[in-house]
Image (cartoon, rainbow, N blue to C red; front, side, top):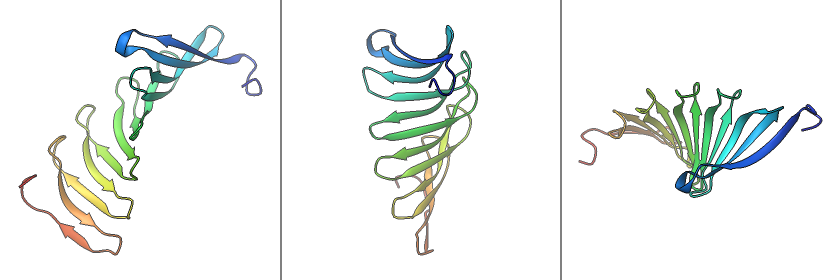
Length: 142
């Protein structure tokens, strides 16, 4: 850090109470410092941030089961991708809070495509690595 800028320093502190207690890492220049990372002391999830102090935006959240990636400005972050420990990668589109799954890439190279609103997504097509395609019709769970 001193090679980048001798005025920069990394600090760690605990904020919040009870279930909301978190260890927060900040990159400081003088007294001000942008939040870089926040780790929940209760559940162990780690949130990563980018941006200047007061405008930090969440860019990813790491769980034991995988990582969720976000894009957008502070307060308007959208979930765009989740990478699971089993190798699946899910892609999302839509407004904040209504992001819906549109595609899943499987570890074997298959790709599933979905349509529908959040929570009611239906698989409509599955493309296998060999180029074969399976189509789905009907209501979810029927």
